[in-house]
Length: 308
Image 1 (cartoon, rainbow, N blue to C red):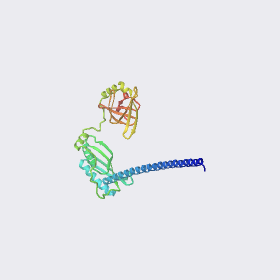
Image 2 (tube, rainbow, N blue to C red; image 1 turned 120 degrees about the vertical axis):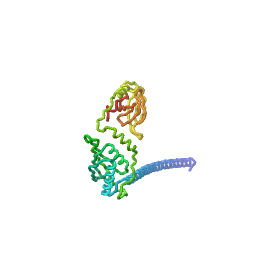
Image 3 (cartoon, rainbow, N blue to C red; image 1 turned 45 degrees about the vertical axis):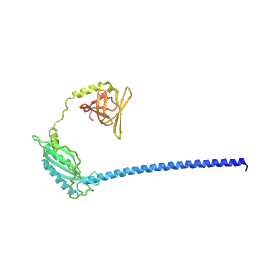
Image 4 (cartoon, helix red, strand yellow; image 1 turned 30 degrees about the horizontal axis):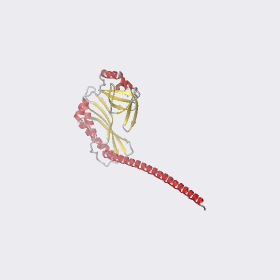
């Protein structure tokens, strides 16, 4: 083999070696990418599993807490104990009980038993507020689902009908007693609540005050050139709730707002009270104005005019 052939063989060998090396590096990179993707997939699955586990733990903790507030698991004992407690609360408030009955039904979950108590009583608003105060201070797993109040002609008392739902969960560990835990409700003093309730004539149709000031505010906004250029162009919902965009027609400038933000375009100046995807409710002074999506701020109208 002459020198030329030797050089050719060496060259071919180097090319083969280069090809093998390049192929090996390519295969190595592909293997690394596959392994990295598998690792990311596993990490994603692990994160989801951890979140699911955390949700499960929170749900289990919540279920355990509800079990500590539940009526006893034995339905007959639960009915007797709760009815005794209920009569005591009604009597202490001054209400006169005409009838108190109960029936059982399916709960919101197969692990729950619902007991419905119906109360027919007579009494004043002050006495009813006293009963409700004690009811919502108690930590039982209960609620008032329906209420009917009918004034008695010529008297200060009311005919009162209450539908009360209480739950008995199968994880309750009490067999012969109700929970002694108070509720977490934050209540003002009973005396203040009674004054606020009794001072109102709840059976008279409400007549709103004259809308002179509202009409004046609406006219001022409608005639404002800046407000006429500001249009609500979108409402999007994200992690922070609803976000509204307002675009100036003449300049194209866009500003973004959320509930609670102050907003000012000319005489349209106030705080955003509510965004619901189709309108914005803004408190201006002592009045509430609303603007529909796609409208200019100058087209704001009193909330009462477009309720709902």
